[in-house]
Image (cartoon, rainbow, N blue to C red):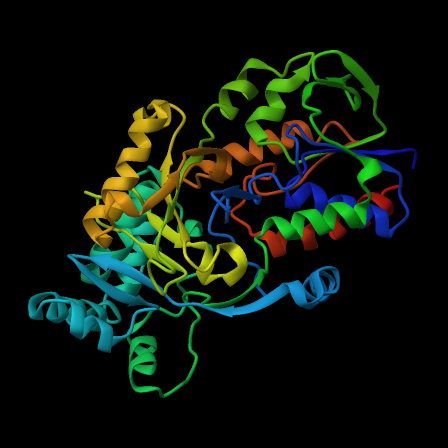
Length: 442
């Protein structure tokens, strides 16, 4: 094998680079920005650190976890930090349990939840194809309407009857009547199947993982500020890439973590019109982040606060200090508000000050933060945060992957490259599998 060329320096691309380094394969990674990490970076504001998303590292794969522990050592913290749902002026524990629901909901809401949870088990079983159908059948209509459907529609920007059940990412498996009772009465301690309340987190932010992966792979093999602007092909393989609109580099093996629709538009000669039309049907959700530094040691005791109410534009608030105490000085804290949107949404096109004011208004209204307590704030745009898994996505992805499969030295990786809702631990493990597959095909 002559050389691997990897496009994208996020966790997926870095995972491939690390695997290549472990197998002594020559490679070059091309990252468009000035730092590795992609959408899993750590940024700073007013002496505080925050991540470009509420990232965590989960112990789901022993080999991957062992490797990351080896890279970070005692800088990888074991964290148990609960989350809450904000509903009608109250904070409800998440994972849900009956005690918190009883304290926070009206008798009418409680009765509706209990009845709908109980009756959902006895309804006629039939194939459920949408997120709304699966969620309502499994958790009951009342609970689904209160906490899951509105939130999911805000997060994905698609009516829940048009969403694939896969958008839950497997995070809600334990949310059942039986699970609620176990949570409430302690019949099975630490039951947290439907939300991972315990996780690993780097001492100085999620970006530490990307930094250490980059160091392991070798900075001499990573080109920053190097945007791939064209992918040159013939009928059966990729022959080269163009970097920053001018430099053309011959390729032997090309691995792309770019969004699936984007790579198709970089091909030269261009892809068939029907393929480009299909790629335009794939949608990605972008994020507007509003980090706000507040003159308080803490704003909440929670890792995250969720906002299912459709009247609140944001979906989630996370507080960096509740993941790692060194993310902010003792006298201040940094909270980050997430506002998901599509590229053609008004919010994404709005001026920075308009978006920031929405965030400032929320922390004033819900958390009672006074103007004089606000030290600093900004707005950060995170494109291509999530692939939108609607009911048609699998058909579209299958057609696009079938077309790209004709190029025998082109390989796709990552959440956006493969259009899959996966996480950091998945991406690092997948990098090793991809390198093994490439080697086995030599």
